[in-house]
Image (cartoon, rainbow, N blue to C red; front, side, top):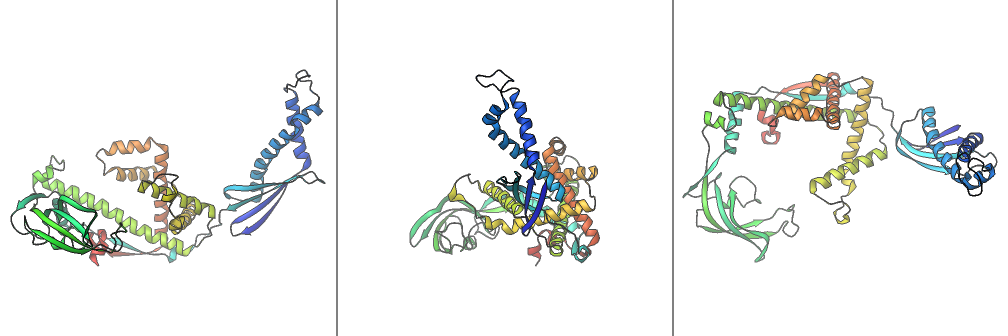
Amino acid sequence: MQVSIETTSGLERRMTVQIPKDRLEKEVQARLKQLAGRAKIQGFRPGKVPMNVIKQRYGGQVEQEVMGEMIQSSYVEALTQQNLRPVGMPHIQPAETSKESGEMAYTATFEVYPDITIKGLDEIKVERPVLEISEQDMDDMLQTIRKQRKQWKETDRAAENGDRVVIDFEGFMNGEPFEGGTAKEYAVEIGAKRMIPGFEDQLAGIKAGEERTLKLKFPAEYHSRDLAGKDVEFKVSARKVEMPELPELNDEFAASFGITEGGLLALREQVKENMQREAEQKIRTQVKRQVLDGILNQNPVDLPKVLIDNEIEHLIQQQRQALGLSEGNQSQDIDPKLFEDQARRRVALGLILSELVKQNNLKVEPAKLRKTLENIAASYERPEEVIKYYYGDKERLSEIENLVLEDEAIDWVVTKASVTDRKISFSELMNPTAAE
């Protein structure tokens, strides 16, 4: 068997394979002999059919079957011989058998995985947040939780920021009502920023029974094209004004979270543990992003088009599921170009991290896998059942193992990178834009 390789472009290769005539004929003859022993042809006894009749009746079919099988087996053999790692399925084009030599030849066109030499890890710069959760941080978090449990009490005074106003309203554009602009007994919390800009602000100072006309403009990026960027008016009638009432921070408040012993002190401890877990995850996410960006910057790599296309298709399917779009509806098609950059990044990181794991013989330690599962399960009501579910499903467990292995690779890179610790508050870590 003769094999020749041609680089057509980038990672694409065209491999030409020639199989000797005697190898093909030998296998065809062997198959025809086997067939002759069991063929049933009218006019001949079983096992007594002349070979020329067998060849005339089945020769073409057998030759095609043998050629197909030889293409498959020789393709794998040729890849091993040439030390090639193909990506995806090849495009195979059988060539006509040479009339002179009788050899079978075909070409297989495919992409190969790039050769990756990881470098520049010591050039990666990482700023790692460091914090200690203070008593003030816990006080602030308890206040946030307290506000989430607030009750509403009707009041006769004018509405203030933080109050809730129950209204009837009707929207008009150019003097005409517009679709979706009408509601009855609709509760609006002033300052919550859930309505279009200006709506909540213009309700400040309103009293129960009062009517107002709000002059507003829909945002340019509003989801409804008919309303985006348009001037409108809302005629509003206030049914009632409600003020918030916050629960007392006491043992009874703690009991509402299922804490039966320790009261408020136990709740504070539980809150601190949750905050610590959230902070650790946030820090890890920030460090991971910096490491991955650094790896990509230091290690540009050629990417197989087939892997990019597969990743784009995967991302499109995820998006369709998230949006609830049906399959096969061309009016709901999503432009693949929207996902190209994301797909290229994910493919590049996958290839680099895979090579890094292989080169450094990184493995998933059972204890670390267990710890990761415990962290995932911690937010569920019955953590042990969640952990048991993962250990009982090999596919799901494999997904977590891959995440842990990726974390192992990130941790390994951090040991090589230039890391600077920066003290930070909990609020700044969790809400960086608010701290600016």
